[in-house]
Length: 454
Image 1 (cartoon, rainbow, N blue to C red):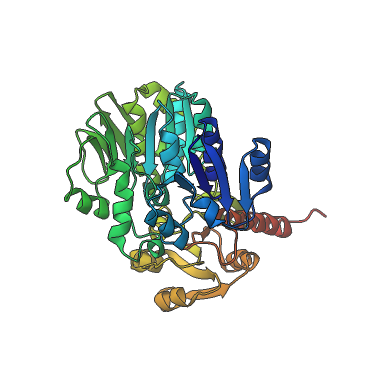
Image 2 (image 1 turned 120 degrees about the vertical axis):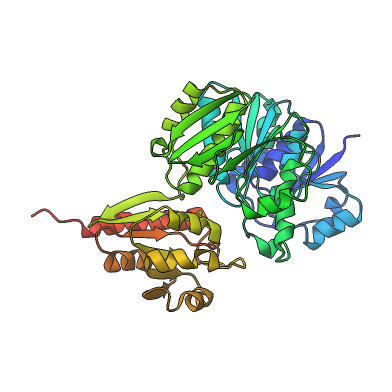
């Protein structure tokens, strides 16, 4: 009799896990407390996978031999606690899919820079001719891709929420971009809990593996001092030149691995800012570690285009530039965004605060921000913290108004920067929706304000 797999959550991750479980001969049932998206409902119907939506039938769920849960479902919810009390294993899609692939796994996590680093690493391997897939927190479901298991490598963007449900997963190359306070509402407002989650990327790695990390990240540095690291390490430094690993000094990146070395000037990179130099160095070290040649590396770097919502220029009018950094959902991201510009800024900030400490950006805001526009339903914390530190603070719940104010208060040479430091769920569906609405409003502003032909 086939073992029973129950999948909780019917998004990309959950439906992919259900399809893989079915392909491997399990009896599968998917349950989602919300309404399923039409695309995912149709995939389940087409593949004759049993499912329910808008409810969880606990009696059916408790029949499972194993449960695969969406990363969006916290461990603390009563259903997950009850499953574990009954001794029913609860894992994530990445954990489940990794059982069924022989490919080399490059796993990338960190508080900031995950997506850019993942996309760039994938791009460097793909343009070099390697047979590589892209999955995790981006792209098509890892589990769905593993059904065919047609790749030699997978580049996986891994969130802390995913890591919490990964136990036997083993990365061949692990990249840890940085660790700064984020999602503390999910980790009992205890930063160490979040650090522990991020370091799960190293679990089960052996001496044949490679660990790439930024050594000046204070949290990483402190945690490494407590641990014995088994895989070989390739640290990255912005302060000293390293004999092994990556160095960002004198406006250039130097990378040295057992498989080869590479050097490139920062002004040749297609992505700007210190944080993106760190992201690029991580990706370069990963690519060198799997044998990509310096020539192919250079080719890949020069042809890379970053994902939207990450310091994305979206328009210019009267010398005022508008930049969409909606993916900056924590303070550390905003710190790097502010540090990427020397021109005066009009900063659009705000949303759902996740336990933010704004002292990290206090000095940069005082130095660079002419006008702060708070875009959120509750702006009191921002207004209180930055009162007297910014010449003008405005607030609105309307992205169109925020863009209009950026134009009205801006002068030639200013940058209107949407870099919220907060989650988006008070006014928007997600950070993409927030960034898309910002971009749309900027484009409409340009159409309104550009000179009319007579």
